[in-house]
Length: 537
Ligand SMILES: Cc1cc2nc3c(=O)[nH]c(=O)nc-3n(C[C@H](O)[C@H](O)[C@H](O)COP(=O)(O)OP(=O)(O)OC[C@H]3O[C@@H](n4cnc5c(N)ncnc54)[C@H](O)[C@@H]3O)c2cc1C
Image (cartoon, rainbow, N blue to C red):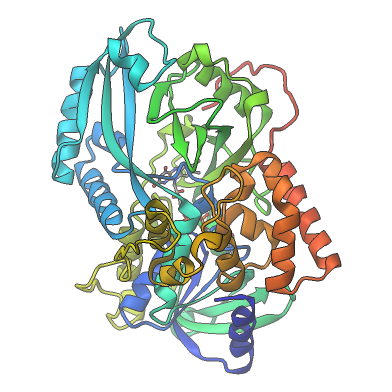
């Protein structure tokens, strides 16, 4: 879908009102997953996102597709088994988008869990996945596995397998799959008001606003799904319902890989509060994450890291990898996401449970919490809850493939490297041959990133890019992967925006200013702060 298709769909909503089966609010992974499951069941479904697709938490997570070892450690076997199975499913269905990532954990003298206990837990973890994928190493191997990792007190190391993705591209691929089966999705459309007054005072639809034009329309549906994550209380509040969400911010620092190369995702305990934190390789960079603290910033713009969080993450990495002497000067960029956690009032944010919850309030079904990894299961639970409004059509169906066109067909001698083709198959599914047809010019990489010019052009042509930040922060990640938000490449990127989207010089200038303001405010280092006195979690 391009921006013209977006306009056509909006006009259809205005001029030819129909009653939808399902109206989904929120274009993150939860909303996208629900749309995908609706199309599988033959339901007529529309998704609206107030900003850009994946603008919320689903472009700012830690990108792990994982079984959740912490659930296992707390005895939640069912949840871990489900997550492990979903991880395996995604690895099989979308290689190139969801890829294996090896983790490494050092076991230090006097620290829990010791290596032998951790390995017993991993025996169970791997049993759930159906194959063994962990190994214990003596401490002397550290210089091969994770050069620079603190050796003082190190007794052994454990390597184990999970997976990693690009969360925003995962959302886009799920949306693409849903659209190919008749699902509809609009970015920059906000659900403003809940319309009540259906039979028995039920919710009958929503007032939607196109935030680009200011136009409004009333849309009716048999059931409305509130998949707005950390924003879920806003629509529920209109029903007079009490807030449930405790928004918790998690922030990351991104470093150039040449400055601090890691081949594993290395977990370690922060010296200040003993929370697990980690450093991992992602898209040719090295990422350090993450914090976990109450989010009290304005929710209408991107979340941003604070100076105290920067200090905290740097303190942690300097403790775990002292010889690398990482400082704030090494940081390429930052990002912060908001966990849509259902609050229980726990004093320690990290003790709040991370599972999803579902509420049905007279036909407004709200879902919040959970993880990227289990989005398909969450969507199935949502539709199960919605099935009373859908005469049973929400029930689970036998066919369960998320990505139907996920077959990787590598073309030899086409000017595109094999690993590039695989990456495209994962990210673009059945339209990949279109990208491959662009040959070596399409496969030319942009700077040191793994992103190619063909991907950027494809996004401009087919992926409903409305603003420059959609292109640089979510369709591609150039803003996070290249120095100064890809500043050196803006002239060439701008020309392509003008050619493909028809922006004139004034529009382009406005878009560059908007993007650079967002980048400076929400994806850069904040000004220096005094060293923090208290713990951060
Ligand atoms: C720091 C951090 C690290 C994480 N790491 C991992 C990880 O490694 N692995 C993992 O599996 N999970 C991880 N998670 C959890 C995971 O990212 C989230 O559970 C998931 O992204 C939530 O998706 P969502 O669709 O529910 O919410 P979101 O992605 O936030 O989507 C909700 C959307 O609703 C939109 N919206 C709000 N109000 C309206 C309205 N009125 N009208 C229209 N649209 C509206 C918002 O703009 C937003 O885009 C992490 C989370 C955080 C914060």
